[in-house]
Amino acid sequence: MPDRKMFWRIVRRLFAAQRGRLLVILLALGAGAALTAALLNIQIDAKTRLTKEFRAFGTNVIVAPRETGASAPALLDEAVVRQVREFHAPPQSSAISDLYVVVDASSSRTNLSSKVVVAGKRWEFPPAMSVRGSLKGAPLAQDSKENICVVGSKVTEQLHVQLGDSLRLQNSGREEACVAMIAPARGDEEDNQISTTLEAAQRLAALPEKISLMQLNVSGTPREIRDYIAALAQHVPGADVHGLRQFTDAEAKIYNRISGLLTSTIILVLALTGLCVMAAMTNVAMERKNDVGLMKAIGGATRRVLRLFLAEAALLGLAGGVIGGAAGLLLSIWLGKSVFGVAARPRLIVYPVSVGLTILVAIISAYPLRRLANISPASVFRGES
Image 1 (cartoon, rainbow, N blue to C red):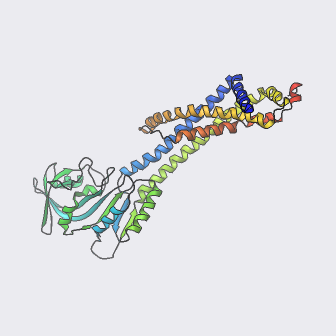
Image 2 (spheres, helix red, strand yellow; image 1 turned 90 degrees about the vertical axis):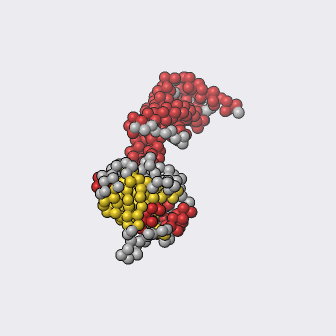
Image 3 (cartoon, helix red, strand yellow; image 1 turned 180 degrees about the vertical axis):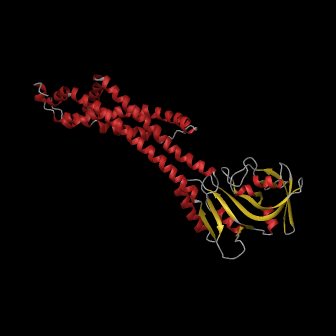
C-alpha cells in the first residue's frame, strides 16, 4: 500500500513538472480521438442509413411460383401466403400479395377504353416503410366502401383519367368499378398498370385464393437478407424464393466502399496522432534523464520507472479520449448534416471504442521512454548523458 501511494504521488508530480509539453500531447490525443470518434460514428450510422434508404426502394425478396413449363402462367395458392405469415419475419419487414390480370379499362367520363394490366395488391403484414406498388399517402384500403384504384401515369394519359373519375374494369363478362387516384410517374412497369385490391383482381380473373407472387421488403444487411431468403425457401418448399440482387449487391458495394474509405482515414488519423505524441515523448524523455538517474540511484528498478511513465501516458490517453470522444460525437452530427444533409445519430458504442483506441495509441507512442531504461545513474551524475 505505501508503494502504491508513492507511485501515484510520483505520477502526479510528473504531470506538474512539464505542463506545457504534456498539454501539447493531450491536445494531439484529444484531436485524434475527436476525428476517430466522428469517423467511426459516421461509418456505423452510414450502414444503418444505407439499409434504410435501400429498403425505401421497395421489394428486395420475391416469393414466386415455380416454373411448370405450361402455357398458362403459374400461380401461387394463398396457403403459401399463410406459410410466409407464420414464418418469423425480421423487424421492419413488410409484404404484399399480387395478382396480375389483363382487363379492358374504360373511363365513364371520357368513354375511352384500353387493354390494361390490373395489379391486385394486399398487405400481408403491416409495412414499416413505403413498399413498391403503394401510393404514399393513399394505400389500397381493404375495408373501404368504395373500391379505390391507383392509375399509373401512362394509363392516365391513354384514358385521360382525372382524380376521382369512375373506372370500369371488365374481363370475360366480369366487371369491377373503382374510383381513380393518380399515381406520379415512377419510370417502371407500374406506370402501365392500374393497382386495386387483391380481392377485386381475383374476381376479375375468376381466380379465388390465387396470387401471382409475393413481394417482401426485408430489412437488414445483405448477409442477413441472404440468410432470411435461405431460411424462408426451406419453410416454403412449394415456391421459388429469391432476392433482387441489384438492390442487395448495390447496397453491399456502396457500403464497402464507404466503410473502406472511412477505415483507412481512421488508421491514418491514429498513425499521425501516434507520430505527434511520439515526437513529444522523445523530448520528454530527453528532459527526464536526470530524474530517472536519481530514481535508479536510490534503488528504483527499471521496470518500476518505466511503469511510471506508461501510467502517465495511459492517463493522458484516457483524458484525451474522454474529451475528444465526446467532441467527436458532436462533430459527426455536424459533418453528417453538412456533407450528407442528414445529421448522424450518435452511437454509444463509438465512445468507449474511441477512448480505448486513444489510450492504446498513447501507450504505443510512449516507446521513446524505453530509452530511459538504459540510462546509467553514474553517467547522469557525471554529466555524460
